[in-house]
Length: 336
Image (cartoon, rainbow, N blue to C red):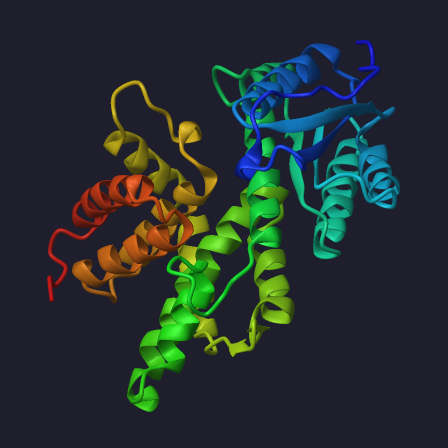
């Protein structure tokens, strides 16, 4: 595969600002060239739906992707990065070393504030790699771009107290701070922040390929008790957060099958926006715990969707699907 000689200029413009298009660096390890070509195809297809300037940088292997991103970030010319590569299990422990260390390197860079979509496949065989890389099937290249763009949006979003559509955490935080009966509502808001953290954690796990225990530890150490734009976030219910996340992970196959059954014809779960996918999984996880009334679950996760997607189109879709999901999972749950 030949390296792109010049940045690829796309025609549309994010945010309507023609003078400052986003810039994404695709860092590719073409050890399995047929696979990385599929990943690139999926990534470029997603990028062509936006207005994003891109460059492609090839490195020898997956282990070289994190240091390449680190070096590129020192130039301060890229808004985000997409890691594309493939690691297939062999007869030695080399697979575990490459898969684990490349994922750890990308996560460490993400915790430093870089916006990275991880599209490094870690699979048992070539057939699995083809299915996951194919833009018409798993489309992990496109998903990695989507993850990077979502992280960039989170990073660049500026929240103001009078913003009609602040982000999800700030929206809940401001509502909490303006509530006069804080003590009586503390448990409610603690759970609401925990739900938001669960959606964020599920998104992070899918984007970074990190395990549930690692992500829980990360959130417990870095994700709670923040002050954003002068607003102190309510303290989450950490036990509730742990329970939700473990429920989502332990029951993911069951949950994903149910989500797939509720989607429109010819849709797959991979076609859904990753944030919406996380909202669906979190709502099902809470329903499986069987401690929250159905109406509360529906309202809470629709509110989260409205905070992330203020246009209304996505929140309407979430409302319809979540209602079907939780009612099927908990047909005898209390409706009050």
